[in-house]
Every structure is written in C-alpha cells, then in structure tokens.
Image (cartoon, rainbow, N blue to C red):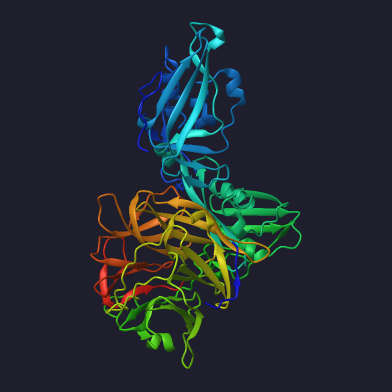
Length: 618
C-alpha cells in the first residue's frame, strides 16, 4: 500500500473479612424545594431532603451511615452534614470540589475499629464507585470493578468516654448516592470552539442546585474555560487573564470583560448565546468589552447591543455543524440516493446523487457524505479500497487508500475523512481463499470484531494527506465502531472485551507537529449490554442501536454528559442494523431486509422506502 504517512505513534460487597458491618439507612423524607431562576424552574423540580441528623447513642458505623444519607442535603452550606462533625472539623471542611458517586446505601460496607481507650475510632467505607464529578463539573462514569475506599476518623465529644461520637476527619470530596446526585445536580452545556474556530462544541458539566441565578453561574463558569477533559480539544474566545463580571436578572444578562485586548467579538457572543439558550426565560444579553458595549445588529434584539440568544444570527457556528436543509442519503441497487422530505408518502421521491459513486460505477459496502455534502467517500465491496468522488456530474472516482481491510468512514467539518482499518494478521500469508462479495449489497454481513490492537485509524486531511491517529488508550480492546463528531473535537467508539461491548467517547487532540490522537476515553451508557451501531445525532447526543440486559434491540439516545441514563427512541423494529441522526432531524434506520425506517416522534417508527445504510452527512 502506497501512502503519504505521518506515523506516530461490582455488585454490592459482602461483609467478609470486616471486623464490624453495619446496616445503613437507605431513605429519607423529601419535600418540594426552591431553586434556580423562578418560574421556568431550570433545575427541573429540585426536591429538598429533610435530614435526620445524628441520633443519641449512635455507634461509629451508624453515625457514618447516617452522615452519608444526610450529605445529600445542600441547604445552608451543608449544615445537615456539619452537625456530625467536631467543631474544628466543621470549620475546616469546605466541600466545594469534586464528588464521588456510589449506587445506593445498600451497597455500602462499613468496617469499624475502635481504639483501646474508646475515645477514637476509624470507619472504613467500601462500595463500588459509580462515577466522579471533577471540580470543574465533568461527570466521569467509573470503570467496571472500581472500588471507592474511604476512611473516616471519629472521636468522642470533648474527649469524654461517654460523649457522642463525632467526625474528626473525612475525605475532601462529597460522597453522594446516585439518587442524591440526580436530585442535587443538573447537567448543562458550556460552549467552546473547535480548534479551527468553525463550530461550537458543547462541554457538558454538572452544577449543584443553587438559589443563585443560573444564567450568572453558567456564564461565570464559561469564562473560566473548558473542563480539563475537553480543554486540549477546543479553544475559548474568553482571554485567560481577562476579568469577567456577570450580572443577571430573570430575562437579561450583562457580561463585562476587562483587560481583553484584541478579541473576536462575534465568537465571544456566540459562546454566550448558545450557553444561554438553555435558559428559555433569558431573552437578551449585553456584551461589554473594556467598558464598550458590543453591537450585534443582525441578532434580532430590541437594539443592536441587546442581542437575542435564540437568534439565527449565531447558527453559522452552531454546534450541529449542519444546515437546516440537510439531506439524508441511502443506497439502493448499488446507487446512492438522497432526500430531505420526511413524509413517508414522498420519502421515495428521492434524487439520485450526482457523480460516479451515486450512479453505482463503483459498488460500495459503506459510504459517508462530507459535512458540506460536496463529496462522497466509500469502501468498495471487497473492503480493500477507499474511494472518493465529488457529488456532481462529470467527475471521477479517486482511490485514496488501497490494499487494506477498511471498515468505517466518517467526516468532520474541516473536510477530513476518518477511516478505520483492520491491520492485524497472523504470521505468514493466509492460505484461505478470499470471500466472495455478498450477493445482496443491501445487507452487508456483520464481521466479527478484530483482535485487540488490530485496528488503525487514519485521518485524510482534505481527503489527501494521510495521518495515522494514535488510539493507544484502546490497544487492549477490540475496536468495533468509530465515528468522529461533526465538529472534529470528539470521537465515539464501541469496543469489545471478553465478548462484552461498551460505548465511550474520547477527545481529539492535534499537537504542534500535526500528530493526531484520540485520548482519555470516557465510558457512556453502561446500562446497555450490547451496542451494535452508533451515530452522532447532535453535538451532545448519540443515537445508539443496542439493548439492555434481557431486552430487545432498539434505538437509544445517549447524552454525552455521562450521567443521564439512555432513553428509548421508540418501539423496537425487527432487524435494525444501521442508525443515523442529525440535529433537528428524524432518526433514519436500515433493516436487514432492505428497508429504510424513519422516526418523527419518540414512540413510533415508519417504513419509508426500500434501501439500506441511510445516513446523514458526517
């Protein structure tokens, strides 16, 4: 193969071996509470916990168990948790950082050791780690089998052998059950630009519920910069050393930046506008740079310096990376077709894609259409060659990669084509005869996953320069599926280990020398037992074909915030093999009997036309 390459590289624990195990209370009363910006309730119905408090005569493990339950009360700076502490500990404890998440109190084992004089005790807490929330708000699901192991030191009040036990030292993190996190935290997106500045990229964070104005909190957090996870893949127009002051009321926000210097005011405004779109009550904002209000005349505000966050003015760099009139593409009898009509009565009135690949001059096993819909890439039926052609008449097919076993294609907004290749091969030449192409190109076979480390990912810059992508973090897993996000800042992958598949997302990083890596993969949708296909539905959501334990194959929507459970995208359809989505568009899917289905709502799928492998650009 001739290439111009730049290569570089548990279930709940038992009480075995514990000196003392305690039963831990599992529930507490909840009542409606206040939070957020008023009528619209952006915190989604926050429910306040009524803490029980420490009871007289509690032993050390009982006290720690009750403390863990009451830690889910956030009122008055965690007053409910502080009453379990000695005064000096209360003064020093500042739970403003990270969070560790466990499943529920039934999974917690507590092991207690009391000193010989009976004045101090240590309580060791062990439970499976569900997730962590970093200081910057990034939610990271825990890897299977990871254990939370924390120690609390307790002492008798005033050193009295008959005094009540109180906490003397404890972990710096908040330790919350999954239910407490769902009740006390909410996911939101901050928006930053991809490295090229052509598309906004959502950075999901979890914020604790607060009575402070949500708009002010979000924009103050936006000015601090992206999370440590996404930071290497994006950029912010907020200067690092600038001072950011945010003033918010129920319908408007003022953002003032000082010490800025030269700045792209439109990009600053776009980051603010898209972040504020999550708060429908906010109708306008003002951006002032070094004391001068910035005018955005086309942003539909009552005046140029009062732009509306929801204005179409900001959509040119929106996180979807696709226009509102995007078309869906599919294959039928060796040709490629496209449509933008979603009514099942007229879906079949599609247009054949111009150019040689649309005409079927080269039969394709897989295809992908560029974000601007100008170019089609495909993998030939034998899987050995990647070809491209313009989606216009009188153009030629170009072989861009050959002599390989290629399995996946996807495009980013910069016109870069991402290709997955199986490279593993036993020593020596295989004597096996090459397999015949499938008799029915509408239903390509599903090959077995490659061995761990036997996949390579290539990125063809402008579909020409070929760069090998470092995916070293997946070297011990079989790479089943890989899709770059349309903004080019992230990539979703399905991997397999010991027969079990998992979904994850990594960030895309390009260094100063042009080397590309996809790194720090974060697991998603651990509730899904099997994942057979993925697609980027939007910049912050995946469409996933899979199933839950003992369930049937169906389409799920998976948020990238890490903590929101997968939601069903409608009733199960027999024989689904492919899925694709795009922002603001219905889902499209292909079945193994050569039919295409569409879903315009969250309940029902409808068959639309004969064909296979329906896909939106990307």
